[in-house]
Amino acid sequence: MKGGVTEEHMYLAYSHQSEDCIFPLHTSISLFLLSYCDRKLFKVFLVPSSDNTDDHLFGKAQPDDLEVHFISRCQLPLVVQSCCLPAIVEENGKFCRAGLSVVLRHIIQKTYEIDPSKKLVLELLGFKKTCLKACAEVSQWTRLCEISIPQAVESLLNASPDQYQAIPPEVLLLEKKLGEPVRVHNDDKIRRQKLQQQKAGDKTVVPALAKRATKNLSPEEIKDQEPASLELRVAFSKLVVQEIPATTNREPSHIRKTKTSDLPPLEHVFAEGLYFTLADVVLLPCIHQFLVFSKKHNKNLLDLPLISSWYHRVQEVPGVKSAAVKCNMQFLQFPDLLSFPDEQLRDFDTIPDDLEEEHEDNQFIGGPRPTMTKLMESGIEAKFSPHPCPRWTLDWNSLPAAVSPGEGKMSSDRALRKQQQLNNLVSMVTKLSKPGDVIVDFCSGGGHVGIVLAHMLPSCQVVLIENKELSLVRAKDRSDELGLHNIWFIQANLDYFKGTFNIGVALHACGVATDMVIEHCIEAHAAFVICPCCYGFIQNTVKFTFPRSHRFKEVLSYKEHMILCRFADQTAVQLPPERRLIGKHCMGLVDLDRAWAAEGGNYSVQVMSMEPESCSPKNNMVVGVPI
Image (cartoon, rainbow, N blue to C red):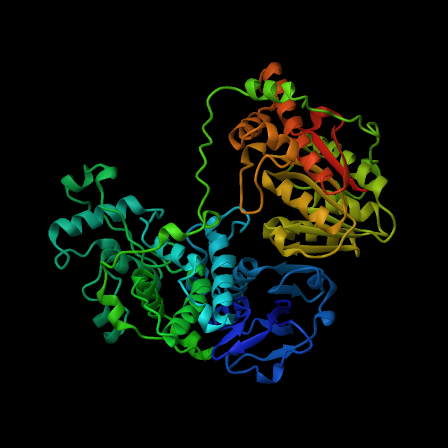
């Protein structure tokens, strides 16, 4: 314990280093943020990628004031061995956070927890504290920052010089995004101030919101900032003052009456818009290494004026240069690049489609009947298998209170329905399991499924995987109250779990999360018991295209399949019975497509209804067993 805070261990992958960069880049990024936060919060371990990795050469890119320990992969705590690095685990080894975004967000939150005066560190999470919180599987921006750009730069740095022919598409996509208009929570107000500034002349109007932006900067920094755009002053005001007092000054009448559509757009100052966030921290080591490589090989960087300006601007953020010094990162200076603000962006047509956001038209005309008829004419109808144990139930009255989902703020009616849902899943898992099995509760939320399974199957190891920290913390508190020893907690996106297991379970995994769980189970050759949810959120992603099965693809287009998904969500009890019946039929068709896709992976799959069906509007249960 340090000052009443439990010591946590951080595990970072290590393959090699080149000058001021440690590979993989996720490790350099993690160490840079640790240096920026200026806190020795964790005991840091480097995990060499192989026994041949030379740890004696490590040191130049290590933060000067950070003690680092080397351990092998087999020495990792068991829960960490099941995850991709970076990872942070609590001292007891039961609660693990894995994946770059989750780990970095935890570093920030831990820093603020230890020292609440570090409000600027907490600001890295953004206005709503959601920066890089969305899963990389569904968020194009998170995927670009967390996965695509680090991988692209690593590939570039590890390739032979003669293989370098063009700027990576991922870097070009960042350049493109830096040129897009900015949206922030108070952008209407700032855009009106920008309009006022433009009409009055840049040097004569300093809007109230940005008035103190340069007040606490050094003379050298002030010199660099004058004259500054409104966006730049607003951005730096966030970095040098704790709060900006509210102002009673109103804009002139002609400014107030200007239509929002006629206001000038805001330009990027930092990666996500006006404010310095965690996204900038992630991108900085990557872009720095890309620029170093490009300069070394005499590559023309004038094609990236926005990235170059961003790179210089980030260096001026308080604390960034000192963090770079600690990591022995020597920033480059390209003053000539900043004199080409009108340089045209190029090669955006070369950005692969899978790097761009999906812009499918989801506004369909008409109902599902033509699509259902089309399937029926091809011999495809929803098929529901009989429930093997429809009357099976746990003796909830005899179970400890912390096992029941009724604990907390849940209403009695909802708690009863949740118990009925759990009866269905637990009955199937109990039927499939054997002593010594590892059972993974994917998208576990507050642990309703996993905690019941851990309590009822003490001879099995249960793993809860959830991306939302607060939900998983609640689950751990309930587990501690019950004294469960056969349970682990992993806060991570699904793709960061790489462990072996025997049964995967998920209650109401939203949208494509259901398909991800099925994919994980097939890769592990594990049985699965899944109750899908939020069919309307299903859409093509980098990982999946719909329909899933070969037979459905022969009959339906993507848009036709999305019609089924859209109407599969119309099963709420408030709807007319006929519409609910159509919704149930659409649910059956969507899950039949999933079942047939899994059967292509050598599985026996059944789609059935939970009993009683009134336990949930989303009452399908998909059960798959490897053949």
